[in-house]
Image (cartoon, rainbow, N blue to C red; front, top):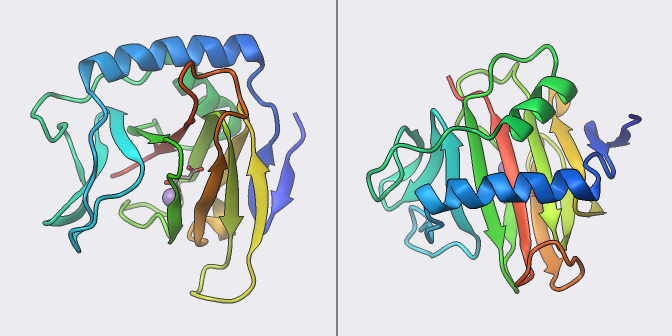
Length: 200
Ligand code: SIN
Ligand code: MN
């Protein structure tokens, strides 16, 4: 499958077909049943507009104490296992990478967004970040490794996969808005983004 380059971020449009998206969603339902979505709060005390949960050895969490990876959900349970369909995407688009340790699950309801940021809470920046989009379209913005400067945006659709690695591993990125109700995948609308990472 050919990738589109956006400032060093590799985009695989339509990587998952509809059947594969439905299958992944089914597996995620089980993850969410065991580890429910919660509303994260930034260290500054603001509630994030996305809801989060995770699978794998570690989940990224934020609260008044700060940003970090934790082996447990804020409610105390261990994170569920990463679904096989998710592991398969990781192995395919990042064949050189180490074993996947974390699958963060973000849910964007109507009006949710994610400000421009870098993924830098991991120990080994030689390892890529892989992201999978499911459901409604999201406007993804990519900037630079340094703060500021030009940015470029692309609408991510259900089934699209990104690899944020190599020289682009620390680029600033975010989601400005979603087009609520543009995909029939999630019964009640919204967007799910899976972010796959090696943490240690
Ligand atoms: C993230 O950067 O954590 C999420 C990106 C996305 O939702 O596409
Ligand atoms: Mn990120």
